[in-house]
Image (tube, rainbow, N blue to C red; front, side):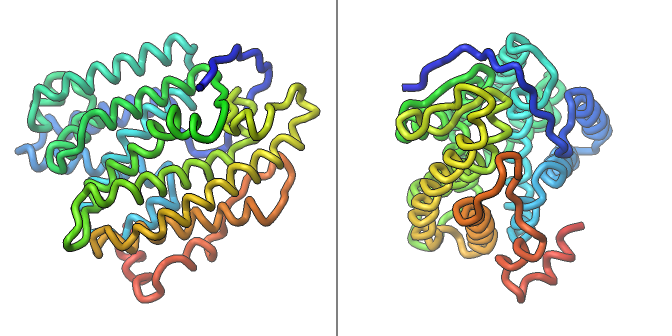
Length: 336
């Protein structure tokens, strides 16, 4: 089982990523809210939400933004909304300069607003009742695609686990107690949007979505072992590797943890790959490109041992190599 431990880590990790603080998110919310209030109808109001989702995805994940350009616009809009709806709670935990108590309180308020959003059925009604725009947009997407509320609640619960420091006894516990809420349910969200192939149902998409969600999350863990140490997070199961007792043990720990997590991820990529054919044909380019892109990053982690503070990335050439050559012209047009 997951065991809560005391966070006595005196070190801080500073990221150079393009992250927004709470005041920037609030400014985006207010700007978008003004546009919604002046919109002529709910369709225009919903477009404001979609534009906000696109802005958030483009800022935070260049790789995922790129592969989603190959989705039909309707699906792409919904994916961007989903991304925004999970990005903000994640930022509460990872980026906002708050105490643990303040973060927990903010997540509680976010969950309360999500539950309250079930009372309303359009964007103007939602936002006029002080439901945040991101939640309002998610509610409309969930209504359209029949996405169960339990998935989003599981995601919020997983974010709470990152506020305090937890260790996980084994890989199954890590998957069941954390990855389910932080990644598997996100895969389920997207399965409802991507849609099934002929003679398949959404239920046929859940297993490959689960497998891919586990693989992607393990790759993220492997890439971020060094950074997560300074955040007080240890995702490598205890039965496979004990956390370092001192800062001097960090280099060996990071190198070993990366291999353990990336090698486990590869097993799940292999499983996920078998289920890609279950997805709607107009979604397969994006899904397969995502799988191949992150699998390449995962392979780099396995094959190239680097210093503990090295952050694994893919070059632009490597990223483009996973996209169908005949479709690259489309990327240029859709990127704007």
